[in-house]
Amino acid sequence: MNTPPPETTKAQRANEQANSDDEVATTPPPITPTAPPPRDAVHCACGAHDEPPLAVLLRTIDFAAWKHQCQRRKDLDQTPYINHPIAVANILSSCGVNDIHLLQAALLHDTVEDTNTTIKEIEEAFGSPVASIVAECTDDVSLNGLERKAEQLRTAPFRSREAQQVKLADKLHNLESIRRSPPVGWGVRRIQSYFMWAKQVTDVCAPANPELSQRLTTLYKTAYTHVDGQYFPCHPEMCGALTEEEKGRVDSRFATCKSGEEPCPRTLFF
Image 1: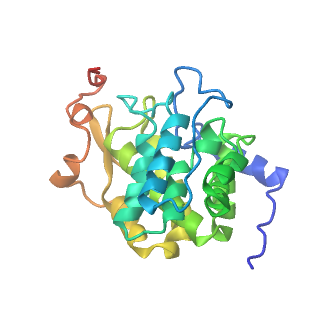
Image 2 (image 1 turned 90 degrees about the horizontal axis):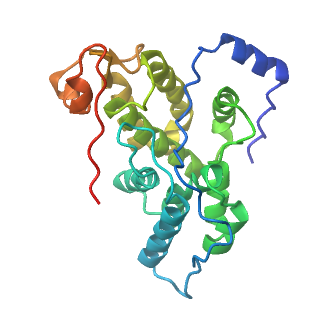
């Protein structure tokens, strides 16, 4: 049994606040343009007896899509937020993860933190193993952005192997998204600060999934982003020289922008 992590004192948090950058480089919260579905809205998340794994996974995707239906990411195109948890589950699957509970938790990992979902609701719909992983992946929303960053780093060594794998995949997708199309309003310092903090967290979780860890290491060594007409290394302490291949990974609308220009979002078709 792991020893519980020590509590962060008020003095430590005050010191972290004083030494932090002006901009808090937390993961951008999803945009919620309209009201989320009410907690008592009719939506069946109950499974049948002896439900096959594929049906379980589809039911979990449906539940996550229902919960995140009004939310969008903070990239230029404000892509649907559900794309993120699906991508996190897909990353885990691509790295050899076939534990259905772990894949379900990946799909649900932001529901409690960012929607009106509760851990009890997840437990009733999908069981305690899934709910337990989701609980481990859920930040304390009563903390401010800087405190949540510090708390993630403080508690990362004490998370289960399953929760650590979700963290690795979650960070990988966030980092790849920021590299390709930074959140609107993020400058170079904020991007670099996020990458450096994310590496601290993923270094702790790395043993949980070596293949995922290697993909993250490659990203830290190669990732550049394009801001205000220039390319910048996302992790200034690890990144190597800019390559033509890396230029191709940045959204072309950013890559062609000159200083002072703003890229335009894609036209939406319905």
